[in-house]
Structures are given as structure tokens and as C-alpha cells.
Image (cartoon, rainbow, N blue to C red):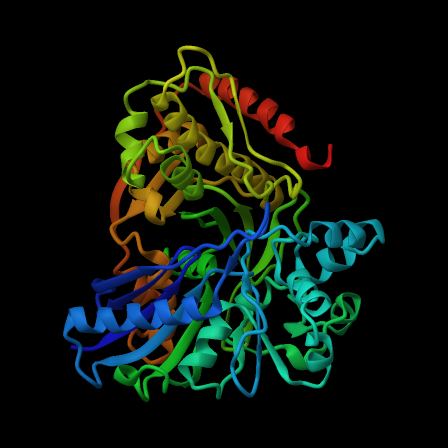
Length: 496
């Protein structure tokens, strides 16, 4: 047997999946790690936890499959994007905890950049608004607030990386400091048109170029593994940010094809080919992947809280014991009875980009039950997706015909039906729901000639279930009006 190993480093856990030539998952291992919340709006991870949990997951997956040395042909990395790490080049020790993509500590920095009229510079070069979500202002915060880091960075003693770069560094024993174009495009430092780190943007944020990794193709050999004995000598041959990897894993290879990943957040992407479409509706123009030196693009709507809202019901309110419990609980009622939940725990992403918004629950009555709140939570995920889909169709001038769904919450049949009802379009769920891991495995496998071409990959993509809209359009419009009113109430709450 021959395998590709996908390392899927997510926000709350690290996973590893072995794929065979039929793109089937042969063995899966997962390890959760601690989420750190130093103060309101701040989210951190210990860098050591990211690496140790990913290494343990890889070793466990190999053990489960009984994979022998030489049977793993290549390794692909996919990762939570925008999460920011800085470490010492000599010792490999991080200078502080990783600042997670959800973190909002740089909101005031972003506000100053906007007030200085600089947002258009970033939009034109990066395709991104100025927001705490992205890595650039996180790096600036580290250099401004962790003693000695600015001087050390200027001397070339420190290295920056998103999670893929941190894993690659550790996998190769500190020999390779690199990233791919999809991850680079999420930093506020990368010009998506030239395919280079941008000197003007680095100067605006006060970040020395020596801190940055080399940018490479998403499919190609990055280096050989030394950091996991069972994988010694195996090449890392594919890297992509988690959402771009999912787009690739869903075989969205033609312009206009759309996928939505239902994870901690929700991420709707439309592949636009070799054309970078500038958004007029506050979506992101991002690099989908770079193959053979050629950039390919996507439009993206980033929703900060999706599955995290379900976790909140479980961990903070205690109304469900497991995330899967939300489906039978929400199914006890036919609607939310006017309850609207806007889960803006760390602000609102696309198409609002409001770091000062905070969550609210509206429309509560004496008759409101846990089931109504559970259903309102599922509806919140679907409403946020609907907002992004509307913006995406307008920007691209392309009507979405179907949405391919993946991620953990895509297994929730009720959520998928609600989504189809709200979109008034088909939602298609593939047999292989682990498309993020599959995407990076595919990128690594193409580089290693494990698969021959994109056509070869498409032959293995199979449908599990199609959800067709069943709700009346008028009903959806009425519900959406309540949602929009509730979003207005949630906007800018911590600045009032």
C-alpha cells in the first residue's frame, strides 16, 4: 500500500489522515489542545501545543493504519490561517503564544490605519480589508509589545510564520522557512498580483522583510521530514490554507464553482480561475493556490463563528452534552419562534467587517426553550452564509447554482436543509467530508505523481446527499429581515 498523509492543523485540534489512491481516508487521528483567552477578544494557542498535538496525531494515524516505512509517499499540510507565530531562528523557541485568527487585540491599530486613509492600499494590493483577522497587524503587535523583539527582528534573528510555516520548520528540523502563496495571501503583506511580499506594506506596518518566509507553489517539494522518526525522509509536497485546501478537495476547478466549509467558523469560497476579482461587497480576493508558478484566485466570505456557537451552547450554557446533540434538540421545534441569535463573539466578518460587534440573542419570550435557541443557532450559521452568498453573486456576476458543503457541521442534516431553504439552492454534500485534508493530500499527491491530474481527482469525487430547498421564498425573506435587524443591533456594541 502507498499513502499520502495529510496534516490538518485546525483551531481547536490537530488531525492527521492517511489517504489511498482512491482518495479514501484509511486512518484518522485527532488531538485537541487548549484554547487560551487572556482577556475579552483575545485568543491564543501555545505554539508547542500546535506542534506536539500535530506530531502525536500523525504518529497515531500511522499506527492505526499499520503503515510501514516507505509506504507514505508524501505529506501535505493544511492549517488554520492568519494565526501568527514568531520564533527565534537559532533555538526555535517562540517569543510568545500564537495569536489566533479570531483574536481582536489589534482592532485599534486597524482603526488608525483606516483613519490614515491606508485601507485602499491594502485592498488594492492584498485583496483584503484592514482587519485584526489577518496576520500583519498581529506581527506588528508582537514587535511593539514583546520586549526586544523589534531589535531582534531587525537583526534577522527571528522568524515569522503562519501555522503551516511553524509546522514545516519543526518537521524539517529548522531547515526550511517557507510558506505557500495561499497562506501568504492572508497576511496583509503579500501582493496577490505580483506574487511577492510588498515593500510598501511592510514599511507601513514596520515589519522587516528578513522576518518573512520564502513563498512557494502550493504543490511541490518543500523539504524532507526529520522531526517525526516514522516519517524520516518523506517529503512535504503540498501546503495550502485550510479553506483553499477545501476548495481544491471539493474539485472546484472551474470558475464559478462554490464550496462552504462548516467548521469553527464558516468559509464560503468561489473559484475565479486566473482572474482576481475585486470585491465591491466586502468579500476577500484571495489566492486559491499557486501551481507551476501560476496564481489562481478565489472570492471568499469569512464567517468567524459557526461551529464555535454550537461549542458555546455545550461548554458555556450546558444545554447540550456533545456538538452532535444540537440536531435532535433543534428538531424538536419547527422554527425558532422569532428567536434570533447573532453569535458575534469576536466581531463580525464578511460582509460586515465589524471588530466591535458582539453577540446578542433577540426575540426571547416566556415560551422560549432550549430547542428554540438550538434552532436559532443553526439558523445563524445559515443566515451568515446567505449574506455572503448574496455578496458573492453580485461581485462575480455569476449565479450560484449549487453549493458544495464540507466540514464537521455538514454532517448535520437539519443544518444542511435549513441552508438549502435559506439559499433557495441545492446544497451538495460529498461522500468525503474531510475535504480540507483531502485538498492538501491532493496537492502533495500531484507533486509526488501519486495522482496524475485534476481530472484524475475529479473521478473520485462522489455525492453523499443533495439537499433541495423546501421553504417558501416569502418565509425566508421574512426570517431574513429579522436577522438583518438583529445584526444592526449587534453592530459596534463595544464602541458605544
